[in-house]
Image (cartoon, rainbow, N blue to C red; front, side):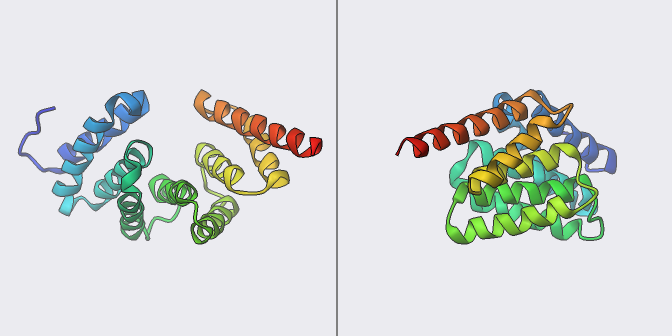
Length: 189
């Protein structure tokens, strides 16, 4: 990727969208390139705060999945995006930044982090404007950090949703299978 020196609105927008499309195609394959593009947008977008926030969310997602030692940076990026988007609480990227925070906190896994993840998740699930994909991600994160009956409820609800990406359906199935396995092993005791 060669970056031109032009920092106008359309250049910044096209770079942000390009990184998002590469993420959608295969974050696993393109994560280094995606982070590079997001870094450029974040650096360039002093006059284009919305695209800076979108890139902060995109970079946080890449860090979450491919750079586990950078979870604090990913969390901070989500916080920065939320500050920028505070006047747009129903914006997709404002909501996605909160979902990512839940996933980051769940991954960190301390009792304090899990309590914070639970609180953010409940607020997201109570929010009427959360798109189905983000609602499903929130439920899957909750299924991984809550106790069995609630966890099963969350994974079952995700499995009943239509039109989700196959990886989310597979993750919900794996969580449900893991819960059934735990239930069987505890019944044998």
